[in-house]
Length: 305
Image (cartoon, rainbow, N blue to C red; front, side, top):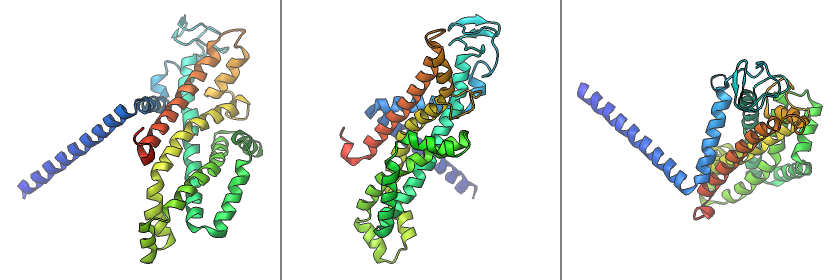
């Protein structure tokens, strides 16, 4: 009995090692085939770490007064060296940029996940069932796409009370229409496959066909849409905050930092708007590069590129 348990434990460890080796090999092949995608993944990982653990990474608290206004990057203040300078309230720019990732990245990820997921369900159901339901959904999608995403987000924020949850809702709503259209077109081709016809022939219900035959075959496209949309969502959040319709001005977000820094760009210091702008650009670049790489890897038509 003991020998059998030891043998089972040894087999489980060997299986786990094999699995880890396969994952490592797959990641290495991905990095070799798509180096820009690998760079994007590293940038995203760094941004997520900054968003999750700012209290351990940032050198100072976001609202700590260092003792010197508009200190040039590298200046030594009463609290120590400020690598990227300070703002008009003596606060460290680097610390505020790191803490700003917590709000900006969180809003981008949550809003995109909600919006794309709702679009996935609507597009899959409408595309598979068709008929009047599909016609009604498409006319609603056309109506939503008639408005630019930023204008639609402004409408929801002015309709509701400004705040993080409202921004998440506003950005998520703007993503439903384009996601619905893209995923519906994919479902229209998948539902004509022979295995879907076979599932209908044996009497599978519509929910079962959607769950076990439709959704699994559009998961890759769903993930790619999420990765490609997060960068745009972060830009929209920063734009709304820049316009004064987003997060409270006291909160350290990239949009707030750009808005305040742009007022003093030519009078005081270039670093005030540049540092958060670079953070936004890096984050958007990372998500876009990873999304492009995943699309190329998972799309059979692009695997040779």
